Length: 414
Image 1 (cartoon, rainbow, N blue to C red):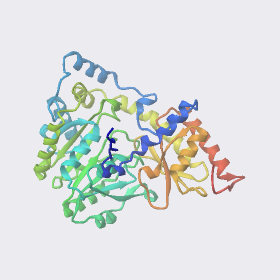
Image 2: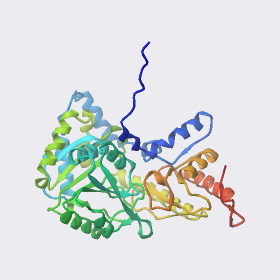
Image 3: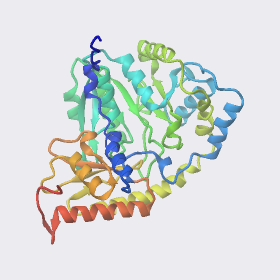
Image 4: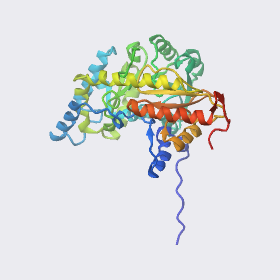
């Protein structure tokens, strides 16, 4: 018989990583063996005690009953695009027409369409560090270069405008923002955004502004990037997953803001959108009811989230060797690890998981300042589950790293 060759994968995919789900493989193995796992790793409110608003479920049900189950227009149904354009106007973004909107299968697809249309192999995009792992995965997929810019933990996870300006080269095409930020929960000040826009203006950059958490705020206001400039090309990304509690529907969108500055890029995105046909059709009929219908579930959600955030901040900052900045938005926090012998936060997270069943995501999976160690905590679970998880975390650290108030064996758990 002829020898069947081993089929290799593309080399540039070797750099694709997605830390949020990668750690789940070990958790699933332990769960299959009967160990109870406390999942504080994934930002899906529907895994906990939150539910999709009933009027949105009725809207998608009605769309299916009414026969909207075939292909939709590639850029989205008119009612959805019109509602998104009106939402932009309500939030202070000027001059948006429905033709500037593309409805996508989640923000993930929206980002992929925009970056694919924008980048040649080897070109550079400035990415937040720490940042959502998808950003670097897309860079690897496109054979482009993701260049990290530092979010400064010592100053509330803000960014350094001088660093960003210094990172720009002739091959730098865009700067990507995640504001509000995953994984830190930080919200950028208006003054910082204005500084970024000035850099983009001077350097000829496109701003890619991921604002999926813009409605999930505690005390700090969010300013849409595109509300601050009419002379900078900005693409804004948003969707249904977080504020409208519909992660699995995969409903997102991108909006070309100041689209007259990027007609070729807009045309390229539209061609790519045509090539993949459309986003899921029935779910598109929920966008207008979401954006323009009842919003009362959001303050109710944030009331519960505030209590869970406050519990998380209080408990984490009371554990020896841990500290965190209070998040201004969303349901994430980056926890700083300063424990003897901990030089690999992924191994710390896995050791904690195997011994206690508590699952976080290692900070190195999001990127972090050299020489620091972190893990991301998702504080979506109810307070009793959070309290149990933090009790186990506290006991684990005190057993392996602290004894009688003094630092213990530097090697940590075996």
